[in-house]
Length: 183
Ligand code: ATP
Ligand code: MG
Image 1 (cartoon, rainbow, N blue to C red):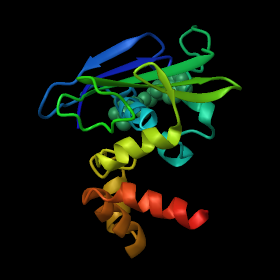
Image 2 (image 1 turned 120 degrees about the horizontal axis):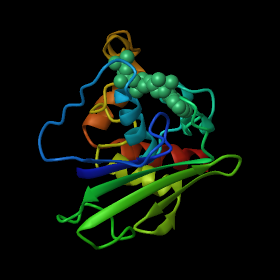
Image 3 (image 1 turned 135 degrees about the vertical axis):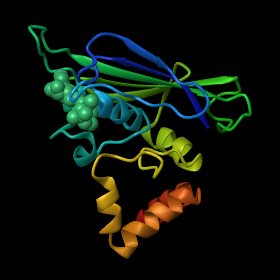
C-alpha cells in the first residue's frame, strides 16, 4: 500500500493547510526541534485510526486540534487526509474501485471524529481494518516513535507477539477474532 499524499488542516501545530507529496522509496523529514516532525507521524497514525493518548501525546481526543499559539486563536476542528495509490486494487471492494483512495478523518470540538472514504462516511472500524489488512495500520511496526526501540527491547512476550503479527500481515485477523470473542 503506497501513500501518495498527506494533507493536514488545523492538526496540532499545522494550523494552515499543509500538503506533503510522498514519493516512492524512502522519505526523510528533517527540521529543527519542535518544528512538527513527530506531529506529522501522528497525523498519519491518526487518520489510520489511532486514538490512544499515549501515542498521540495528549490527554484527550481533542488535543490533536490546533490549540492556539503565536497570537493565532485555537481552531474548532482538525482534518487529516491520506491519499493511497489503489492502482493494484488493494483496497477492499466496499471502499471503491478507483485508482486512488482518499481517507479523511475530521474532528470537531465536542462533536467527535468522523471518517470518509472517497467522500462517503465510513466507520472507524472499517478504516482501521483496511490499514490493518495492508499491514500499515496505526500500530504498524513500520512507524517507529521516538523511544520505541527501547520499549520493544523491554516488551513482554505478548506485546512482542502483536508486533510480529502486524509484521506478518495477520493483525486484521487478530482484530476480527477479538471482536468475535466479545460477541
Ligand atoms: P523534536 O526534533 O524535538 O522531536 P519535532 O519536530 O518532532 O521535534 P513535534 O513534537 O512534532 O516536533 O512538535 C512539537 C510542537 O508542536 C510544539 O511546539 C508544540 O507546542 C506543538 N503542538 C503540539 N500540539 C499542538 C496543538 N494541539 N496545537 C498547537 N501546537 C501544538
Ligand atoms: Mg519528534
